[in-house]
Length: 404
Image (cartoon, rainbow, N blue to C red; front, top):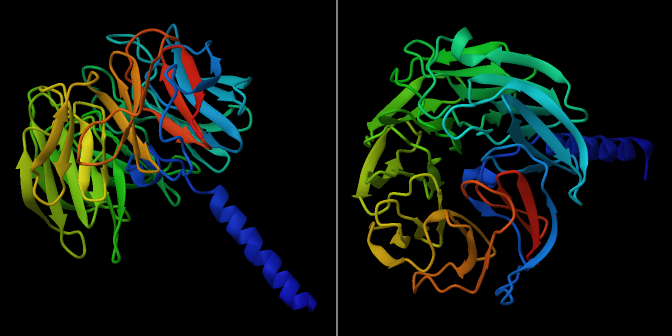
């Protein structure tokens, strides 16, 4: 093999490794779908539940989930009025801990947002509205922006909870002001790339999603009273769709499936399927259901069915994607959050029940169950699956279970 070919292959491999290293972590897994690319997982659990591999019990307060990058586990938490990023190794041992500044200390004190990691940079948005970029190797601060102050934004009753979204060299954040409602910043230096007025509403606890169409990329999020779609490259608002509930809490990330969006919230509001046209510049309602009203537990869509828990009804539901018809409702465990992998639902209830259920419209048939006894406070943090392990955050504890 001649030297030119060898050099070409080496360059191609280097580019592939670099590209992979620059892929940003995303809230609720790839595409923010709540579906994790794992296989060969256990189809049932023993009576005592899955094997507990380790637990780290010295976190501060918080409701965020772990993310995985650079062979480390990163998670946010708060001690007194300070927010910290903890970097653990895969065995649950602390490698470093670094403060990113003040955190939320009012109602339900603690870190809200899950970190986002891209290459050697980590991004965390505090409950007080400050975005900080840290070095992933030691936690040193690269740059910091007071989003609410610098862009005349607005905080909300329980503190902003947005996990920032990164696409290419842009980091997106909802400021909530009438002028700079949503902004895109250069993720390397924090400088403004574009600003959008959106519909001028306050944030609503929602983490946006990037929707990749053939002709453009959309940034889709939910603010106080609307679902909105923006051109992710330019910030132009393409459409808005009214979605109102009693307390302006839109805490679930929209789910993109089969060129449509599923957008939903609790407090009796419900959810709807919105079809996108070819270039994403318009949406059309297909159906609406008051039953599909998860408050903050997310949802997954598998093989044409939506799975999640209801708020007012406090049940676990399966809904037909095409029609909005409910296929089952079960109160076998309390309501909570849901993710999926390998054709199984992983459910974590607000009472600390942890269960696996086959993803089938035939019924909510529990194939394994245990109780999360470690940690304290609300069971609100979303589950994560990584490398054959199920991760549960409960207050000051991060717990790793073997599920493969």
